[in-house]
View 1: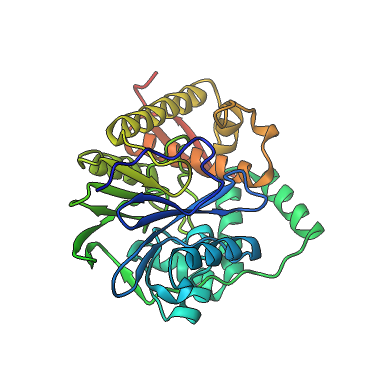
View 2 (view 1 turned 120 degrees about the vertical axis):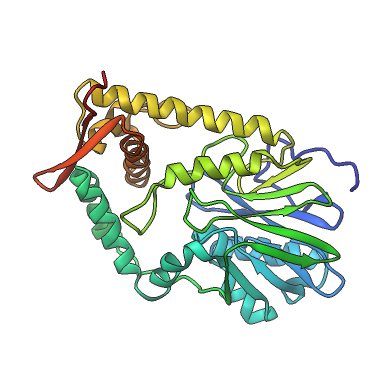
Length: 347
């Protein structure tokens, strides 16, 4: 692998940028999104190219992607395999356009199958499940805010593409490399990382990001322990001898193990704060979320927009449910709302 200096601070601009032998980072803009951009990675191959994530179906994003691919070779037509790290639209959204123009084979994690099929056939069901989860956890006010905004700016439901194949793990062979497909559930149930052991490169998707923590608990399923799975997945990738990490958002970086330690500590701190909020009298996930600081700026819950309030409530649920799983809290229904209290013997 050639010598490489990690991406500068202004990571969301410019590109394409070579980050390894034949591997290029292409930041694709995310209009009206605080994340600013998503990194797509193109790996050039003699018999066609591998593209990892592809951005939204958005005119500006599509223009940046197609112009970047032209600069690097034969354009979209060169893409033979589109590997989406997970089901979210900024990673999978443009898959159909790419498939139409190149015949690319599109893959997605097996754990994201249910979500992908719902988003491709009945996005209204997705919206209803989100509302149901919020209502179950006392966040009727967030539902009302989202509904008011939707009524003021109605949008047609967005259908998402389905992949050609769902991957449950295994190996992907490309350009003489044997790449390990690593299931890393947490951010979504089917999130995948791609590990190049020869180059010691981890394509980390949203699983390990350099500056922010990925949202946890935003799923169409109303059951499960996404935070537990996320923490286990962090410990899995921490063991990799990575020389370079290529994330979906933010600059590329090297210190994988240190960054995983930071993420694990972050969630230990959040679990403690959630437990303390319950001990102080908060009962619903909404009440706990309202008691916690949010984002790196430690904003108060009312300062968040409706989408980020939704994320905050769902992530709080993920933390509270893990505390129930560990026996530190107990949960029960009161007027159809899940309430949490300290487990007997806890103080």
